[in-house]
Length: 457
Ligand SMILES: Cc1cc2nc3c(=O)[nH]c(=O)nc-3n(C[C@H](O)[C@H](O)[C@H](O)COP(=O)(O)OP(=O)(O)OC[C@H]3O[C@@H](n4cnc5c(N)ncnc54)[C@H](O)[C@@H]3O)c2cc1C
Image (cartoon, rainbow, N blue to C red; front, side, top):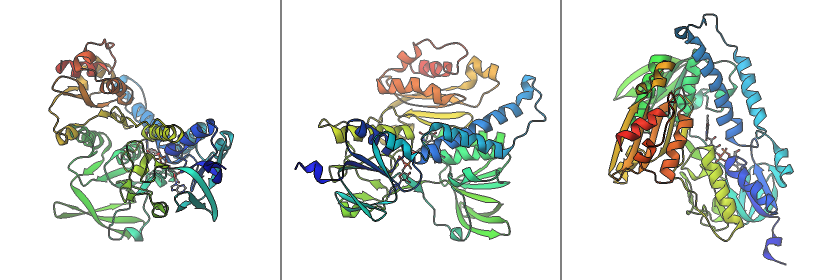
């Protein structure tokens, strides 16, 4: 009997988020016997607790915000209001329409055997799921990550929210303190502040969005502060929390000086920890608390066990998880191995204005000792800024000394769409001159890209 028939499956995928599902369906379509194991809700974060529900709420918030400020365009909006249960119902509809959330049947229809339960490795070829043992010749670990709960005195004694649980709150709290100032924190800060919550953000770095160029974080801090009354406390940390009747007392330390803030709710949205607690030592798979170790082909230290997505501890976006899943599927199915290409990977934050980046940031260029040229075009320079009465934003482009585009950051109303032009430039090594020389339509926000690129030509 050939080796592959000594196992129950050709491939077992652990985790049904984007990093798991793509590979499972690709392998099943190629005729492989595939199982997928999910401990919680099928579909993972993206359709259930991340991208889709958050974006649906942000869409409602953005419309509400625009309409409320419509008087400057001659609109009457004094009586405008919202009904939060209806907004939540809209979010549920958006989630349901994706068809990916909680849909076990989807996998059966794709010829994949779904199992509900926590997978745990017993040996390099065997896992247990609900006391059942399953074996396979290949594995893909796509277990994602969970919100890291910081060590703060008193935190265990109070109820706190995460970006997942805040989606289920009956109504926006009167006041909210967010621990963290990265992507999810900034999106939720704007969302809640738009619906009237008094928001505080506590971030230990010197600016919000510490992994982005500092102009981005500084602008968002100003926008959130001036327009939404969000109070950002940078270079600060939460020292202790305590229940105080229906509210919470939070002690924050900034440069050795302590400050007391009283809030209704606390949200933990600091950083994520990869889910590596699945008996990896029994399989001989190398890992650290920061994620599973893989080579360029996404193979772990055991060559037929692959890993993809947030469990690698590097990237945190659905399209990256999908790209890695497709790469892993190819490498499981075919002799010719490929590697994921991260060079032109866009990152989008769905605030208003949106934030989008691609390629290298200025800090990364510095770390890699790459000599660069850079240019910034403020949004106010383009005609669209006048007709939209919107000025908060910019396009920043970074090139190497020869003018080849290495990276870009955009803060603009449609930055998430605009960024793909610069992703193309980064991926195919185009110069700033080639970008500037491409016609950009009058009254598009993308004119700011042409202006920034022309400064580097
Ligand atoms: C608020 C928020 C907004 C976001 N918005 C966006 C966005 O707009 N665009 C974007 O690209 N990305 C966004 N993201 C990020 C995106 O959702 C994640 O990067 C993506 O879901 C990661 O996919 P994954 O498959 O690696 O992990 P996950 O989606 O987390 O899936 C992992 C799955 O593995 C399961 N699992 C874990 N351990 C086991 C085990 N031992 N056995 C069985 N199953 C297990 C988990 O239950 C989970 O379902 C957002 C995230 C959040 C939180």
